[in-house]
Image 1 (cartoon, rainbow, N blue to C red):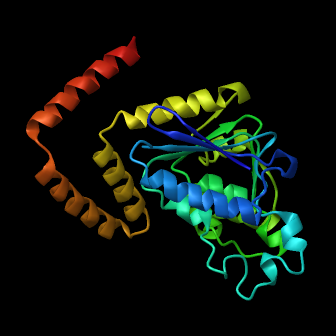
Image 2 (image 1 turned 30 degrees about the horizontal axis):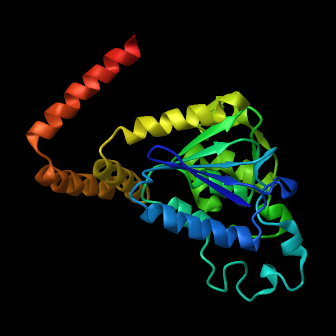
Length: 259
């Protein structure tokens, strides 16, 4: 139900329940959370790509389990009341860069899973929808707060309060995804972006991501102060010769890309 492939410096994690549209069953939730813990601790894995098998990225929580009178919704406090680690929140807190390669429908919890990643690359077959309100569940993975900060509150309310689907093209126009590509280009483009990010020194990559995410949750003035504190700390550990070498490498890369 979960495929893990380690590549050169990063891992590709594939939700593999195509017969259930990669819905998040309790076993898959536990396996995904455990896998994220393992991969974050692995020094050979410097980044992560999440995708799905078949025609869906992820259809959200498993509807059969939600309908089970003895299932997770029957617990006082809901889905995560037994202490199960929420893999969506775990993915959002993943220290290393993450990319959602959205191959198909990303619905409700699947929408949250994609939004928890740093970048979203969408196949032209991808679609996004928040059906929490329609099924009568309040989100537990941050969707009600995160989405409006990405696409604006009015557009977010349209999705939250209608449950309507958003096409990949419209998601691109609204700034929800980084780019839309042909289905056969989804993983190659995602992997190329990952390799670009992994060209940055690892400690800097992790530190910069943490700064961006931390500042995103603050007011503008506090975020600027946090940047100043981080810049000072990084300056104390960075050598001038290292900066010069990286600038030379960057210029070489720019010339290569221009050609």
